[in-house]
Image 1 (spheres, rainbow, N blue to C red):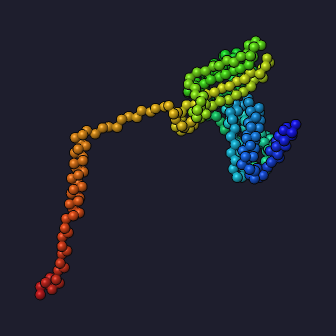
Image 2 (tube, rainbow, N blue to C red):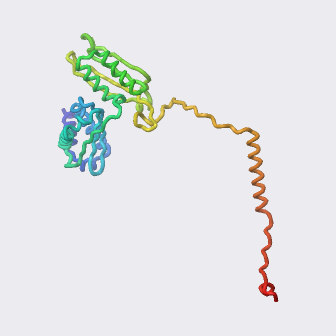
Image 3 (cartoon, rainbow, N blue to C red):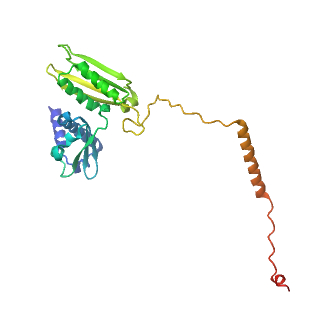
Length: 279
């Protein structure tokens, strides 16, 4: 009871905290508050925009206002007719987290390639299962769609009461997948969803191995550690040409040194003006 009471007090403090007071928090409390804010905001948008291809949210904090960028596959549905839906979401976020008027702005950003977005594919698989499609057919369809989007690899795991009363897990995969190390964190996009079926809850996990992109648009800029690039060899110079170039350079240096050490010519005597006049 004491722990729940203290957590409720901490949660109430977070809710009633304004943006101006948030800047005066200690570093530890600020990180905790930002994490709770992001988690609750992500949960709200996931439940509200599930049918519109919600694919994540990004929070950018500036000194004047907080910008929230919603990534989705169907941005027109997120904006609504004449921007009505995005204004309603802005009002809900402003009242829920006690922002001042004009201190928070919501924007919608289209996902450039939804085949490389794990959250969009997890939502797609969720609605396929809710629609009554067979598990194997739905999962293989997602894997094929992801691999056609030029992903390096894809893995779909479905767990729960898939057939009968016995719960089990089914794994579908294709391509190349790194799960450990720094490359696993950078190159792998993962999403988890829960499907409320009639026979129980089914868990979905979609992991996509992104391709390497030097521009950083379709995938990470950082190349993989085990990728070896063999460069074209430089054109080798023949020994005779190299010796001739060295001899020419030595001769040129000797000529410059000789010109520097040669005695200077005496200065010319000025002409006598009387002699020039004929006297």
